Image (tube, rainbow, N blue to C red):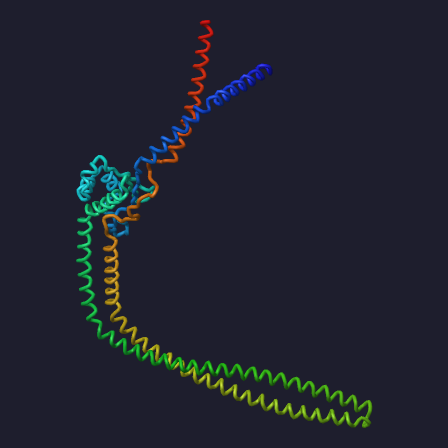
Length: 400
């Protein structure tokens, strides 16, 4: 296609669009009237239409039993439950129970049922203009499903009750045989408690002695450090005195006297420190000896506890098998009681709930559709009228 042809086509399209714009501009009142009338009528009809509400409920098949491997046995399969609901197996009973024969027929009572992917969860919904009636229908559906599976549930619960009764009688018979042994064990436990209290007292004495030893060690270290310091100071002063005597002879007698007095005081202080260090070592040795004595007593108490534990072990051997049997029976009872609590026709995950937003009419959507359709229709009608007028005018001109 040559450049002149492309330019001509563009000009022609621009002329066509411009003519379309002029037609819409001339007929804007007609288009606007159709738009307003359509939107208004649609809005009035939508607002006057009774709202249709959706009621939702969620269930899963009830637990009935379990295999030896622990695999759950459901009261019924998900497929059977869904099939019964969709086929209307409960509809007649629902209508009779709610006494709504005059309001609904079997054909009007419909439920939408779907299963969650990769699970046993079942979602049920029904639509009703009366939300209260719709909720009552969903609640009655749940009641009818439970009634349908009630015989299976009650039969299984009766079997469990009989088994629990037998197990409890067995436990009572076993417990009567171990009462005397338990009393003897209680006496030994009391003796153990006394020994353990005595051990605690001894341990407290040991802790106090350890604290005392720590203090004595710190004191000894401080005294030793002080002794070393004074000895070093005395040595330094003795050397300074010798140096002073060598340099000045007896000329500086006052300084020499001062050095001599200080050295003598240090020697006296060294004697006192040495005495304190020796006393500290004696006290430390006595504390260590006391700890050894208490630790021997503690070992004796440990021996007493071991002897008492041996006696308890002997008694435990006598009752071990019996207690294991009792424990197994009690665990089995707890397991069966838990099983009994879990048994049910269906388990409700979500009670019947009314969606506050009506599923019909969808007012905003209806008005939007009406608006778009009326604009389209108005434009088409305007084009048709314009075309008709042009044809009519051309016919008149041809006759002339």
